[in-house]
Length: 267
Image (cartoon, rainbow, N blue to C red; front, side):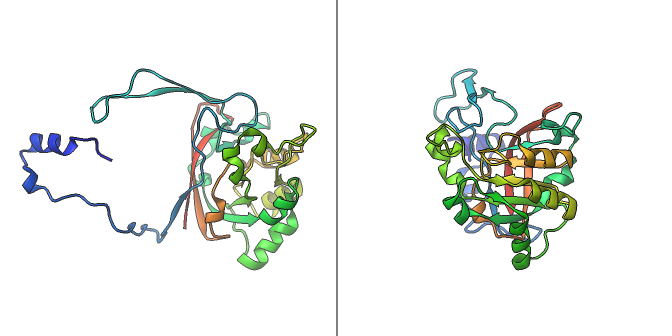
């Protein structure tokens, strides 16, 4: 996107006239990706001060000065304050295991992974405490083929549709104040890391473990296996069950136990 007057400024510096420069136009269709990918999807929520969070602390932003007037050149920036595990984010092993790897210690090749999307939407609509099981993994493989080593296994529960409804809806708060949302069962996590050699797992809820968990066994299994977890994904219904690749752009804070991400899927 160009600011108003950008073309005139460039022409004044190059000596071109308006007649010398052909009118710009957006391409009619996206150009093919060099690797053969035809589509890209953003699986990340926008970070905002009102977004749902696991705890009570919300992101805070503070402009460092007024923005330039419409069409005027100038610099505008904001100061953000948030915890490492805010919005769509990655849990590094060090988030739950003492001495575990932090974000900068995860090599880039582990953050680019083939995606296997396990759909539990129908079950989650009936039972918000449902978890991904070993049977779910095997059923997925019977239809879509083996989950490859280094894959990211993503739970599509449809829970991201609740995001705009706020904390109570996303946390699945019951009448007694307890939380209810889907997650991974520890047995499935153990199977995926030990038998399939996955790079990590991901969920479209606030936590890898279901909302009613108090001991977080899925977190422990994934962390002890030196794998990462993605939380608060969105738009997994756009992806094919297999065949997509995700790219995890995680904030590389020094000694960070995790970080907000822009997660892109290509297929």
